[in-house]
Length: 283
Ligand code: TA6
Image (cartoon, rainbow, N blue to C red):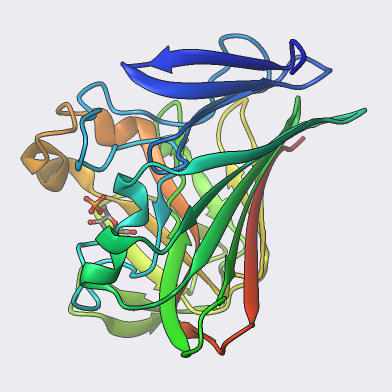
C-alpha cells in the first residue's frame, strides 16, 4: 500500500482510487468492479455519471464503465446486461508501476450465479491509469469441466460537453445492427457519426481505433479482444423515461462500448479470453 491507493466511500459504496505518478486518477467500486470516474487532472472528469444514478444493492449504476457479463442486453434468459454489474467483486492485486498504477478485481461462480447460470467461470477486471490514458481489461477463464458461452461489453459512458457538437470517426463502411429499428442491418455511410436522434447501434467488427471529436476534449478509443463496438445515446424521450437520468442529461454523454455481442465467446474447459478498452487523450 502506497499513497497511490486511496480507499474511500463513493456515493456510499466502498471504492478504491488509483493515483498515477503523473496526477491522473481512476475510481473503481467493489460493486460491479465498476469504474465511476477517470480524471487525467484534478476536476477534469472524462466519464459521465448520472446525477440520479442509483447506488443501491441489486441496481445497475448509470454511468462510468459498467461491466456487462455474461449476457449483453436482453439477448438471453439472464437479467438485462447480465449479473456482473450488480455483484460485489473482490480486489486481488494492486501495483504501483513507474509510469502507471493498476489494480485487479475478481468475480467467480458462486451459489448465487449458479442459480441463474450454471457456468463455472472466473472473471477479472484490471484497471490501469496514467494521466493521459485509462485501460480496462476483462479476462474470463473456464476452470470448470463443461464449455460455456457468453456475451459481454465494457459499457463506457463518456462525458461530452455538448452532444450535438461531437462526432465519432472511424466507423465509415462498417455494418451495424440498429437496435432502434428492430435490429435491421445497415452500413455506416458517413465518415463521421453525429447525433440528431436516438442512436443504439452494434457495429460488427469495426476498426479497433475510433476518435471521439469533442471540442477541446478529443479522445482516442481503442479496443482489442472485443469484436464489436456499441454506440448508444438514448436521446430526449428515452432519457426522460429513465428514473435514473435527469432530463437533458443525454446531452452530456455518449456510450462507446467495447463489446462482444453478435458472436458469443465460446470457452472450452481450461480456455481463457481477454478483451481491453483503452481511452487516451488525443490531440
Ligand atoms: O448498450 C446499449 C444498450 O444495450 C441500450 O439498448 C440501452 O438501453 C442501454 O444499453 C442501457 O441499458 P441499461 O440496462 O443499463 O438501462
